[in-house]
Image 1 (cartoon, rainbow, N blue to C red):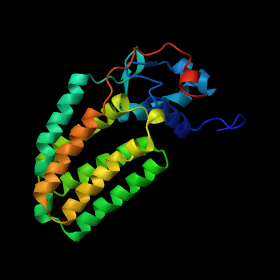
Image 2 (image 1 turned 60 degrees about the vertical axis):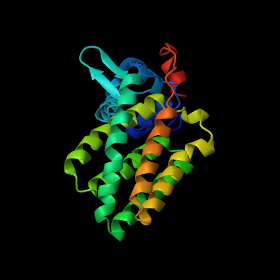
Image 3 (image 1 turned 90 degrees about the horizontal axis):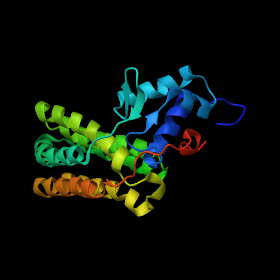
Length: 232
């Protein structure tokens, strides 16, 4: 994005996502269309598609007559999500392995490769999405449509939780950022060996580790200039 080139819808979306991941825009922060438009140097109609896209991803809440605000899951809700995932996902792993073919394992390996590439490129939002797809691929291959449906909702809520309370992307050491991929790789190795008990154990530990890394002590959303918060 240059001074002579106005930002695209994707540019605006990416800037907001990056500011949320960097914990410059905190849960509860109001995203006033006029201020966003001024910060990006565009009209209000240009920022609306980005806000709608963020709302469709449950990252932003669009409130009638009150504007947009970054969604704010409570710590209690976050813990409930991970508790539910620890109850569901080990069972899904075992069911997946009971009928998995080589192509199913290869699909997981490809998702993991894409996640590793995204983390290496600093594309944390993309990495979070791919991590969710890795878990959902296991659920979809389990044959249990009911639990897979429950997990789809939980993964969506987890993405929001990680956006709001995961370690700030700008402060995240490379070894910590890669931790999730290493855990996925260990899980995949156990699944290649068809070791259901080990895979179930690794899944529980993986989910517990993610939960333990959440940071809930953010201060109240700042009233700073949106352009500064967005890094413009």
